[in-house]
Image (cartoon, rainbow, N blue to C red; front, side, top):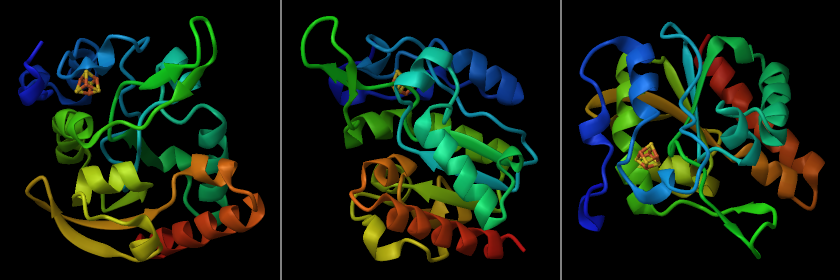
Length: 212
Ligand code: SF4
C-alpha cells in the first residue's frame, strides 16, 4: 500500500469499463488503511442516467455487512424523506465520500461504533467519487452532512451555513449544482427527531425543485 503521505485510490481506478469496472476495481482498493478492518468496499448504487446523486459520509455497520450504501436505519429514513420531498429514491445514484467503514470497538468482540473518517482518508477516496461523477453526470448532487461536504467543497464547508441552498461549484473539474443537508444519521441522533426530520425534508424539497 502507499506510504501515509501518499494515500490515494488513484492507481486503483480503471480508465474505462463504466460503472461495472469501477465497482469491480473498488473491491480491491488499498488506497488507504480503511480496507484493513472493514468487511468489504461499499460502492455506489444506481444508474448512469440518474438525475440526482446523493453523497453520504461512509458506510455504516449494516452497509459494511451487506455491501450496499444506505441500507441501514439512516438509509430507511433517507428514503422516507426523499419520497416526502418528491424525489423517487429509485431514480437516485447513492454513494459515499468514503467507501470503507471506519469504526472502533470499546473492547474486543463489542459492537462496532462509527468513527468519522479523516480529511486525508476522504481525500484518498476522492478518485472513486470523481469517477462516479464523471460517469453519472448528475444534474444535482445532494450533499449529506459535513464529511461529504468537506470532501466535495473543501475543509471550510459548514453544513449549517449552506444547508437547503443551491450551490454552483466546480467539483473535480466539472461545474456542478449541489444542495447540502444534514446526514440522515444526525436526524436519528437528534434530541428532537421530528424537527430534525422536517428540516431534512425541507432541504430535500429544495433539491426536488432544482430538478424541475
Ligand atoms: S476508503 Fe476508499 S481509498 Fe481507502 S481503501 Fe477504501 S476505497 Fe480505497
